[in-house]
Image (cartoon, rainbow, N blue to C red):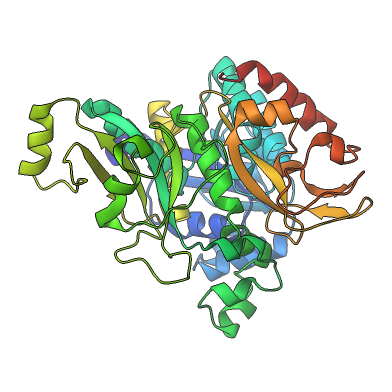
Length: 446
């Protein structure tokens, strides 16, 4: 727990940690909101296709205009200011930048940016979980070969789950499950960008302010984001996805250890060692008592009777048997915490969560009956939701990953809740990503 001390020591020597940020949307804005309060933490450049919007984001999070007025990256380095550009490649080319934060949310662009940054010898903090779930294992392998860090973003739920899993292993407990809370009912599955605001308490004024993307929020609502994040966690922790996708059992704090244990032990899991979601709503829509909608959790088993007794003596929340316990973190602050990943990579050469194997995937699944010739519209759209399944199943089916399901044409009709395969669609673009995923099959963990 000494990142701040390590940073202070570097800053005292006049060697700040220099960063390039790609994407100045909601997550990027939160990163920037805190960056100005961390001495020795220098965002040298911000790349966004919409420079005007990026500057508006900086103003919204209370940056002084002169702080992001540098006319070049070289000027930004020499003066301690920030350069705003639409050219992400310039960040990779700058020798002073050591960490790239990829926060575009665009899976294909995210993969390409990560490859370019790794090729330039820079650490990568991948905020873009959509890219990570699609190609994370192969990107992690490329980064390791290049001697740089490829990391999940601290503050987002996957990295926090990885931290909890590491805690379980470090303590010598038996890991049973990892997951997060989420506001979900089965009927939410077929939400669209046209209906999504019905599921949130935002005012019309808040939505109109421009900080809320309907497709992004719809991906939270219909379960797509959950599938993406939980598949990424499975790849990072060597846990599995349920064989038929996430079950979303409702559970509050008091229920975690009882629910997230195997069916054979009275729980709801098909087996030990999987990821799933603790829904904050019952199937009929009632709110779950003590739900963990914004939190993350792990469940674990005592390895012997003595440890079981200690669970009881020290007030751990357990199931009725006392053998299974739970630990949780009640919140995550996404971009406000991402500096932890940046500093861990730059100062310790360690990721805050990284895909180790190809164990799970988030695959495109139809929201309705659609005819040949219709176009899929990707994550958070009208046509598909993502289902988290074991990678062995995804590979055997030749399933279309959700990250490649945007603006592709159906070659044949599909039915509601059908997993879309590569044979169902016309593959005309993004061949480099398909080739990368083909190579990633080497890392398939059977």
